[in-house]
Amino acid sequence: MIVSILYSSPTFEAVDYNERKVANGVASLLVAENMGYLEEGQQHSANQLRQQLIDYSAQNERISKPQMHVAFSCRGDEMNNDELVDFARKWLKEMGYADLKQPLLIYSHNDTDNNHIHVITSRVDPQGRKINHNHERVRSKAFVEKTLGVDTRAELNKAVRDSLEYRFSSIGEWRAIMEARGYDVKQEGEVMKIARNGAYQATFPLSTILDNAASKEEKIDKKHRNRLKAWLLKYRDLSCCKEELQKAMKREFGVDLVFWGGKDNPRGYFIIDNRLKQVVKGSAVVKLSTLLQFEAPEEKLKCMEAFVDAQMEANPKLTPHELNCNLKEFYGGWYKEGVVHYKGTEYVIPEYMREALKYNFKVAKVSRFAFADEQAKEALC
Figure 1 (tube, rainbow, N blue to C red):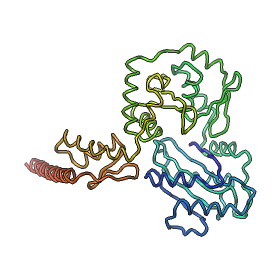
Figure 2: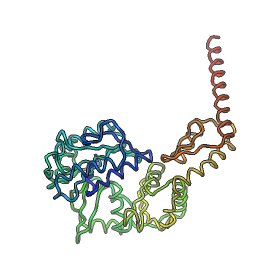
Figure 3: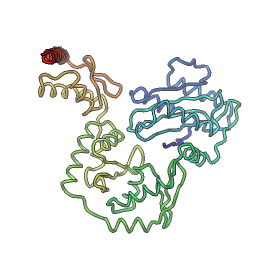
Figure 4: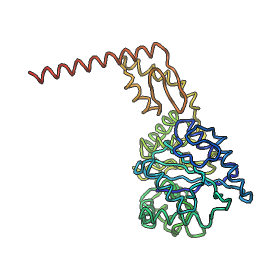
């Protein structure tokens, strides 16, 4: 479990962020409690939700950034949404946000391989007092460890030992390995400080990393570089942003992409091949400017007509189920009743394609029934 206390804001920008995810079909609002004049059970716009939180927090004008925004993420699907919400409520109680009248929004996200939720509330309690934020990251870390029985130091030591088995040639490349595992690394003099969830957990001698880099430096094999390049360009064309590309590369090939520099404007990236245990400087494979040439979802949706046409040309007996499987595999989209859905947008395929798919579905259905009848007859004989 990773609990991340995210940025504060005077205008509750986290609501807009989560509502955009909802609009794009990759998130949903699970909980909306104590939202004042907004009726529970009704649908409200991002502006209405945000304004209610602003109005509620205005009872304490001394707090300039009242937004409290927290993300709870588990490994894979080891916890479902109900379990994540239950854990979040226990965390909120521990941190002082569990008053029965405290406003609360909880969103689930499904845009990564790890189940996770986002929680939004105010740093102002219902009586207008500032909720204690002293040492909140340390208190959060202690609660997670106590509740889940996690030995974070043992996990960290294992992560460091595993990282030293990789082939890398610089401190930056080693840091990328650790960041791919959810750790933040900062160099101070001859020491590397390692943190998680905003709290520093250990220090590590810089000399050990440098010695390991010098002993394992190795240039990437030309065939493997070409293979990585082909993978990156293929899944770039199937993705709309670097986060989607990261997810696809991890899912399909066990490859982590770690970008460095600004979050929205990275200056470079590393490729971590976890199967070969090798770190590669991204620019040696595909230039960053080339890698980040993504098409908008609307443009990708237009390309799907050509994709569907090509699928039907290759397989004239293509059924809606088979098309759906192909769209999910190659685009992350899906097909139903003549409409292709992708990232919250829809595209109606031409009528001749719809009719052909309907016909193929009927033929396949009749064939299945006929096959079942033959099997039944054989069984009786």
